[in-house]
Structure formats: C-alpha cells, structure tokens
Length: 367
Image (cartoon, rainbow, N blue to C red; front, side, top):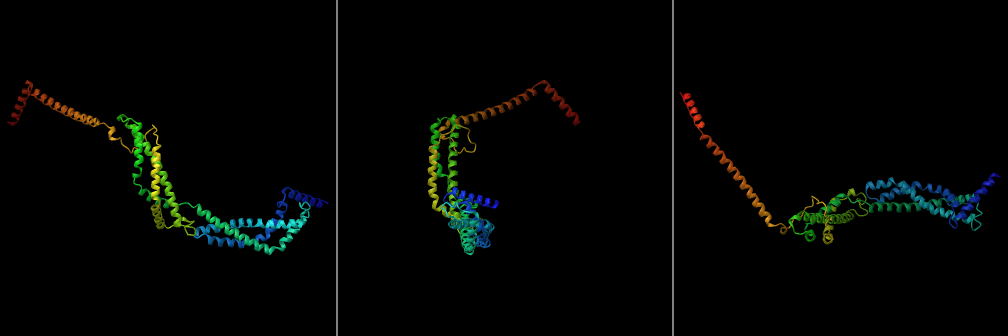
C-alpha cells in the first residue's frame, strides 16, 4: 500500500513538472536521461584526454604554452562532455516522451515506465552513443582549445622592449621645431593679456610656463598613443598567429622587431607629425592662463627684449661704477690719514728726546 502511494506521488510530481514547463522537455525526463547517459559518456574520458593533448600540441607552437594547455586538459574535456551531453539528453527525452506519454500533455507518465524506457534505449544504443559522443566531444575540444589560443593571442601584452624601441625611434625624429608655431601663439596670447611692463615679468613667465605645460601634455599623450600602435604592429609582424612567439612573447626575435619598428615609422611618422602639430595648435588656441603658482621646472621662455628697458642696464652699470669709485676713495682716505698721523708723531718734542736716548743707547753698546 505504501509503495503504491509512493508511485502515485512520484507520478503526480512528474505530471505537475511537465504541465508547468509546457512544451519544453521537463526536468522529470531530463534528469533520468542525464543519469542514464553518464555511463556511455564516461567511456569517452580517456580517449578525450588523449585527443585534448594532441590538440594542444597541434594548436600551440612553443613548449610553455603547450604545457599550460595540456595541464588544462581535464577542464577542456569536462566542458566538451557537458556540451555534448546536452544534445543526447534532448534525443533521449524525445524518445522517452514518444514511447511513454499516451496523452498529449504526458500527465499519464509513471516513474517505473519512464525508467524502463530510458534504460532500454540507452542499452540498445550504447555503442552508437559512445561513438557519437566521442565525435561530439572531439569537436568541442578542438573548438574550445582553438578559442583558448585566440583569446590568449588577442589579449597578449606587448613586451616593454618593443614599446621602448618604438618610443626611442619616435622621439629621435621629434626635433622640437614642430612646437614652434604653437609656442609663438602662446607667446602672443600672453603678450595680449599682460601689459608690456617690467613689473609684469613674473606674470609673463607664469603665463608662458602654463602654456608649455599644456603643450607638453599634448606631446606625451600623442607620443604614447603612436608608440602603442607602432609596438602592436611590430609585435603582430614579428610574432603572427602560428609562430613560436605568438603566445610566449619572451621568444620574440629582437632584431626583427627593431626592423619592423623602423619600417612602421617610415610609413606612418609624417601622418603622426601632422596630427601632432594640429593638436599643438588646437591646444595653443584654446589656452587660457591661470594665475596660480609658477611651476619651477617649466620656465622655458624668457621675457622678450622689447619688454626690458635699456635704461635698466645703464642704471646697473652706473651703480656699479659708483660703488667702485666710493670704495677706492675710501681706501685712499684711510692711507692719507695714516701717513698724517705718522708725521704728527715725529714732529712732537717727546719724539726727539726719545730718539736721542735711543741713539745714546746704541753708542754705549758699540763702545
């Protein structure tokens, strides 16, 4: 009696699940099919592992990426089996629905009948299922490993040495003349905003310093962008898909990257230079000075000569000459006073008496 009740409850649950999921394959059928297909699928595991290793060695072309791929073989096989199993579950479910359900909505299905039908189908189709599963697993393995290769190829980092090669050749071609027009424009803006007065020298320097900072930021940004494009192109040419260094960029040939970097600059530098000059002028025309502190390391401009009066230099020279004359006059005065003091001492009577005593002492010593 209790067993009959359990069967009725299970049947009711299956019918409810089917009715809730509509026309799609219900879980009440999917789960038994998945369990029944586990046996044939497990027999494909060892062959699938060998297939994954072979595919890794075929897809990757350097020892380290090949080893990393083989180490991930179990994960590749698991995903391939799961993908393949979904298709066979659908086949099993459709077969079970066709041979178990007598009503359109399958509300008359019983667990025992469903189990027997599924097991019979799997047993009769076992060898064919294994072969079909192996083919499906191998197809998924090939696709997954190739996708893994392309993901690593697309996301590979550009070696720093390649970036430095491109940056070095780019900077060596920039002479500074490409910035002159923009510098002149900034000087004009600063001259227009600041009255030409020597008292405004500091403000003028501050204005031009800020302009230089803005142009320097433009230069840094554009050079970095051009360097990255050059490095990416260089790496793609030196290490294309299928090469040993395609994934393991530590194997890239530096002599080839050097040649490819120079070739890229030969073809693209003039366009970059034109764009850079245009960006310089855009930055200069939109320049608005901010009267904040002057960056101490950016004072690259000097005040124009027409803003410095010539009287400044004349006044400086006259002041220096006056100081020299005063100093020399002071020295001469001290010397004259010293000599006068000596003459005054010699002209006193006490001085003559002292001299006679000294002469008498000298005579006595001589005798």
